[in-house]
Length: 66
Image 1 (cartoon, rainbow, N blue to C red):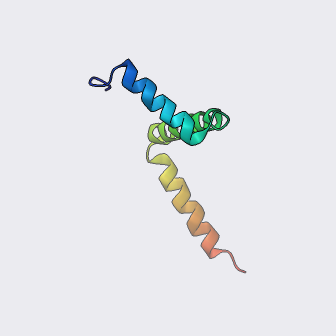
Image 2: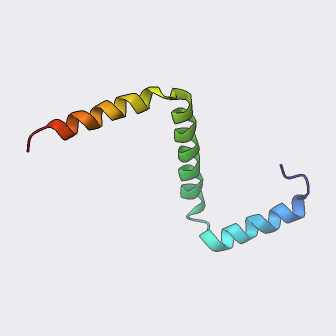
């Protein structure tokens, strides 16, 4: 994946990221990214089962009287 990037290039990229986001925001940024990846993997694993349930939930909500 990083075949053409060496250690010096990665360190420069890391320094730029630290300058842009700051040291305090990096842990929150990493945590948010990890949670997003985890949620994506979970949704891919569950497959089409959730789509059918959400469709039936939406149809039952639209039928309720106001």
